[in-house]
Length: 303
Ligand code: CP
Ligand code: NVA
Image (tube, rainbow, N blue to C red; front, side, top):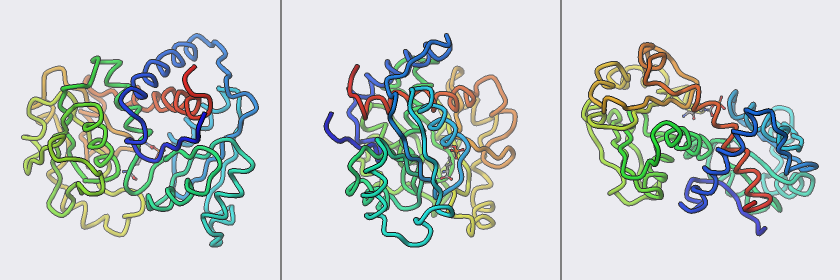
């Protein structure tokens, strides 16, 4: 297996995603049946967190143990990363001792630099620009509930952030459309996502973005690393709260997703996230299954 990193959604092809979604479904079925699936026995994953996490930590850590491997957990505060050891040196050292690395950090350039000097595959566990593992789980969840996402419409309501950028990349690669509605000043940046414009449309009014959508999705108003902007963002985003009216504007069988953690009464009303169209708990659980498929694929290829 040649060295393959997963730093952004576009690092895999549509064909590879089709394989991974099938594989994740199989791995999930075995997990539910308490059937052992341990192709990564004796392999080690290093997880580096420079930002907080619940889902990413638990899903990668539990997932790697379930695959038969083990995990090393590092944070900025308890490693030399926080004492200015160069990222290139950290990459060279860590990747001599483990088989796989997952990183959650700030700038995408940081993870790209790490990958450049790593002997082993590197997975993006969230950067300021992208969150590919989450979108992989979201699309797998959509497929479980509604079948193929090709030709469908996803409404993105809120910040033009790492999740939004990754949705755009996924739309272009897998053939669906994203209706994006953000407050002025918080638009998606097409250059960051690196997509052509026809995979997404921009709407000033979030209600219009939701009209006819198969999936309505949102995220926190203030992502990690942007906390100093919190008060300004609360004012700017006041009209970008996914409520029952927005869900009614979408298709009658539209799903609601949120990568979590969520703030009820800010980016989403409780009646939506806790309502019948919400699949957020499946979405969170599926992080485990798709990432197990991903780790297996990066280390062993197609099985
Ligand atoms: N959705 C997600 O990545 O959650 P955590 O920040 O808890 O990992
Ligand atoms: N956009 C959010 C996602 C958290 C999982 C953030 O970056 O903080």
